[in-house]
Length: 317
Ligand SMILES: NC(=O)c1ccc[n+]([C@@H]2O[C@H](COP(=O)([O-])OP(=O)(O)OC[C@H]3O[C@@H](n4cnc5c(N)ncnc54)[C@H](OP(=O)(O)O)[C@@H]3O)[C@@H](O)[C@H]2O)c1
Image 1 (cartoon, rainbow, N blue to C red):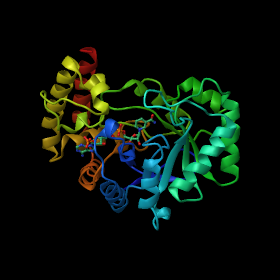
Image 2: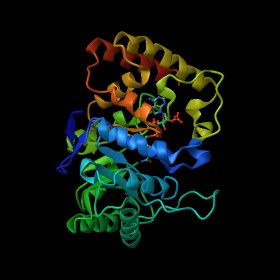
Image 3: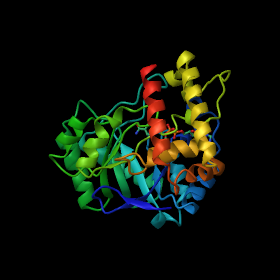
C-alpha cells in the first residue's frame, strides 16, 4: 500500500489506518469483541501494508492499548503507533471521562501508555479532546519535552478547531489533526481540511464509515444496542435517508467491482487534505475488505456525481 508523509513529522503512513476503539472490548460500546480476533485483525492490517494503528487509553480503559501492545510484539518497527492523552478514566459508568491536559497528567499518561503498549516510544501522541481548564501552552510544552527526549515522535490533536490548533502552534509543532470526517460528517471539509492543507498538517479523520453505516450492511428494520443506539444517524427518518444514500452509492461501487465500504474509503482517502482515514475494524475479514478501498482511482465524473448526491443528502437534513 502506498504511503504519505505525516505532515512535517518525517513519518510516513499508509493510505488508510486501523482504528482500535472497538478492540477496547467494552460490551455496551461495541458489543462482544474477541481479543484473539482483534489481534488477528491488527496482524492482517500489517500484512496488508497498513502501518498506522490508532488507539487511546480510554478505549476499554487501557484494554485497547494492551491488545495493540500484544499484537505488535516483534513487529514494532512496522508500525506508526498513534495513541492519545487527555481523557481520564471515569470513576463510574455514568460519568463522562474527565478531561485533563495538564503537564503532570500528560507525562503520567504517556508513561502508562508506553507500559501498556510494551514500547519505549509512541510515534504520534495526540490530545484526545481540548481541555478548557488547561492553558494549551502548558500542554504543548509538555509534549515538546516528550518529543525532545524521544518518548514521542510527532504531536497530534483531535477534535480541535482551527482556532485551537493555531493557538497550540504558537508553542510547538502540531504535526497532525484527527477530526471526525465522513460522507455523513462533512464539516471538516469546510474549514479544518483547507487549514491543515495550507499549513502542512496531516489529517487522519476518524469514523470514515460512520460506525459501519456506510458499509451497506444495515437494513431499515435493524435496531441497535451498542454505541449506534445513541447516534442520530441510526435513528428514525435520518437512518432511512442514510440507507437510501448507501443504496445509491452501491450502484456506483458495483461499476468498479467494489463494495460500498471500499467506495466510501476511496472517496475519503482521496479527499483533498486527507492523509489517512482511520477505519475501525474488529476482525481480519473487515480489514481485508477495507484495504481494498485504496489502490484504485475513482473517475472524476463519479466523484462529481457523489458530491452532488451528498449535497442533496445534506440539504434534506
Ligand atoms: N479521536 C476521537 O475522538 C475518535 C472518535 C471515534 C473514533 N476514533 C478512532 O477512529 C477509529 C474509527 O472510527 P469508528 O470505529 O468510530 O468508526 P468507523 O471506522 O466508521 O466504523 C468502524 C466499525 O464499522 C464496522 N466495520 C468496519 N469495517 C467493516 C466492513 N468492511 N464491513 C462491515 N462492517 C465494517 C465495524 O463494527 P461492527 O462490526 O460492529 O459493525 C467497525 O468497528 C476508531 O477505532 C478510533 O481509533 C477517534
